[in-house]
Image 1 (cartoon, rainbow, N blue to C red):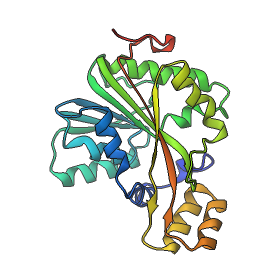
Image 2 (cartoon, one colour):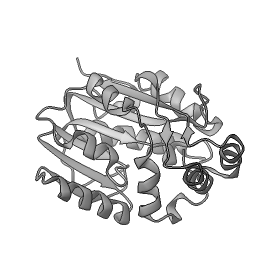
Image 3 (cartoon, helix red, strand yellow):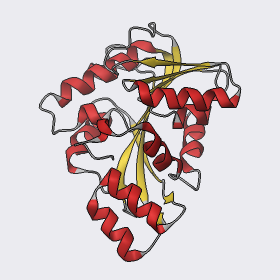
Length: 244
C-alpha cells in the first residue's frame, strides 16, 4: 500500500513507473481472468489510477469506464488507452462512494484495485460507513449475477502475506459481513536496477523498505496481494444480501 501521508501529492508519472514494474510474472491478469469472463462484458474500474487494470482487460471487454477522483491519473490512463487503438473505453472523475455518471445495473464486472483501502482504513473513524457506501454503490451499478473484484496490498517487501494493521478490519468485513471470497497471489516487482528499486520504493513505501533494498542490493522486491471477489451483490449490499 502506498504511503497514506502523501499519496495524493504524487504526480502520475513516477507512480505509473512504479506500477509498471509490479507483477512481473503476470499473476494479476491470470487471477482476474480465472475469476471472471471479461469477454464482451461491460466493466467499471473504480480507482483506476493510471489505468493498469483497465488496460489488462480492455481488449476483452465490450466497454470499460475508468473511474478515479484524480484527473491527472486518468489523463495518463487515457493516453495509454488511446495508444492501444481501442474505442470501447472512457474515463470518469468521481468519488467511489457516489458515481452519478454510471446508471443502475449498467455493468457486468466491477474492478477496484488498491483504492477502497484509502476510504476503509481503520485510521478513519467512519471507515465502516465509507466501506458500506462503496459496496452499496458497487451493488447499484452491478447487473444481477455480475462480479465484483477487489485487489489490495498484503505487504510490499514481504514473501508471505502480512496485512497492514489498519486494513485488517476492512479485510475481515469484506469476508465476514459482505461475503467475499479471498485468495492471495504474489505480485513481485522487477525494477531496472537496484538504484531504481530503492528510490521508487523509498518514495512510495517509506525509508524502511528503501533501506532494506539498499542493504540487500536487489532489484526484485517481493509483494503479496489479496484478491476478494463476489458474484450477485445487490444494491442492499450493506446487509450482505445476495442475488439468487
